[in-house]
Amino acid sequence: MPSSSPSTTAPTTSARPNRVTPGAAETSPHAYDAGLLLLRLVLGLTMAAHGSQKLFGWFGGGGIDGTGQFFTASGYPAGNAMAVVAGLTETAGGLALAIGLLTPLAGAAIVGTMVNAIAVTWGGGFFAPKGSEYELLLTAGAAALALTGPGRYAVDRFLPVVRAHRLAYGAAAVVVGLVTAGVILLLRK
Image 1 (tube, helix red, strand yellow):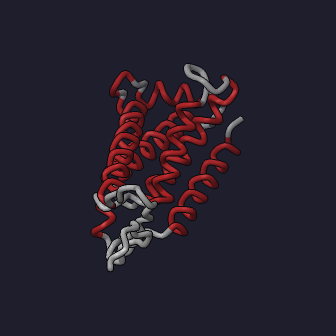
Image 2: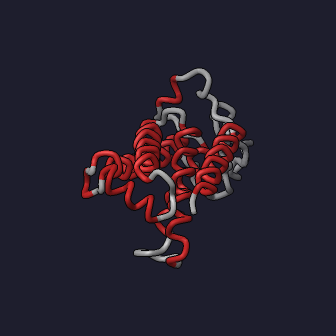
Image 3: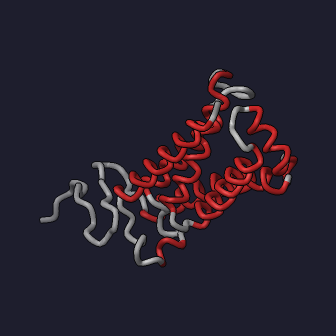
């Protein structure tokens, strides 16, 4: 006679184990992938737009000269060079994150630039407009994507080397982003 109690084991065909709580409905693995896609698109395109403000002056940005002056005033040497580096990192990292290309490295690029942004806004408290809440949220989102991977709906799925995301890859990438951010912060006066 079949048991009337719900199963507590995960299907063996899923790439992710689905933990089933008695009385709870199973969650589709596609729901996780759709959520990761949404997060990647919003965070990645937001960062790409920020980078284009720095590089091209789009969306009301200062361009290289205006952003360079801001970097110089914030204590960074060679303000225009820093504007180019930050702009390229945000634009390329944001676009790569949005499409899910080399996701751990793209997330690390965003983490590195945002750690520097947090350092600049740190003295203004936590809340906007002068605080660091926005930068902290972007940093955490990028680190989370680097650690979890891009999900199924990503270019990484078609690249043999990164198809099977490993937590170690994401953690190593986040460490690289943090170390790079630290080196840049050491240059700041």
